[in-house]
Length: 384
Image (cartoon, rainbow, N blue to C red; front, top):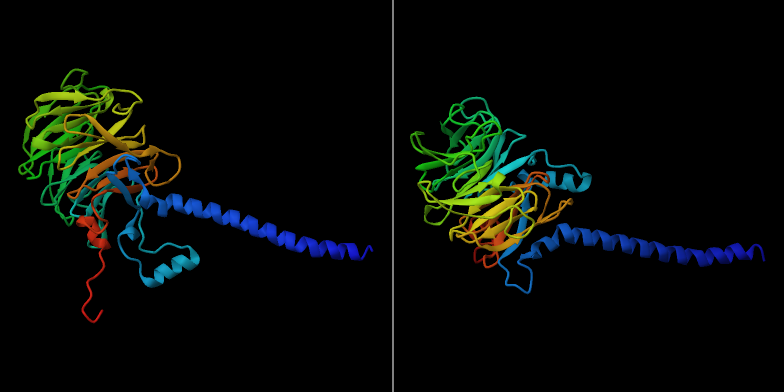
């Protein structure tokens, strides 16, 4: 009997233990799949606004480094799968701040790397601008913009001037210098490249919180907009500027928790926004962008989102949420924002070191400048 009991127990316990292992493994698989869905497949189904409202935008992808643009060699890809090591050529974002986009080419300022990192998505290329000695050296890049020809304008907070490069990263010229700027924040250029608007954020000991306007060709100073204050047309720690419909200028007035609107010559028109937690309010507004219809997009670091307004400042919708987890459309420290020619939105998060891309719902994944990289090569009649 004593010999039989352990034997019987063993026969009974073995299937039970196997069943428990299967259940446990199944639970692990379920959790893992759920997590994968949260950061992977489900990301493609994130639409804004949520049903039952009519969808306007869909989360498309995230860009974190060079391998999101440059295809890995087969050997490197196999090594990564087998060993978990990254491609030797891979280079990620360190501390991205702002972004500018021209025909599928993404320019991202990386203040920690002291350079602008370029992700040429259609061309499947990656390179850096400004990390070499010489006139084109960059100290601390913050705000960026591009003109209609694709020339890049970089606000350098350390060297206190605007550096101008062509679309391939060749240094062209500089605008302004330490005598013209107290504390550079951002730069915006019009389509033609004729006017350059530079936001000087100022500081606690100066009233020079303003937008300085220059001739984009000669670098000559034209006029200034604003000074420190709380009244119409005055600023307290301005952050960024976007050019909207009919040449309107939209300035993020960070310390006054509002966006002010001016005509192209700097005449004050109106303001919208106030400090608060409700939609349409601001807590820590950073950068601003405008689309071809004149709608404006305002990034807010405290809310962890960006809000979309019509040209007159009426709230249309918002996208994103504050998150301590690195998930699609979840942000800890968002900063830069841009809208490209096709209406795609690019949103930068410094904390998670990534750029999220949102596509207009009516635009197919393979359409537009960025979408061309997703198109499959045409085949001949023979299928070759």
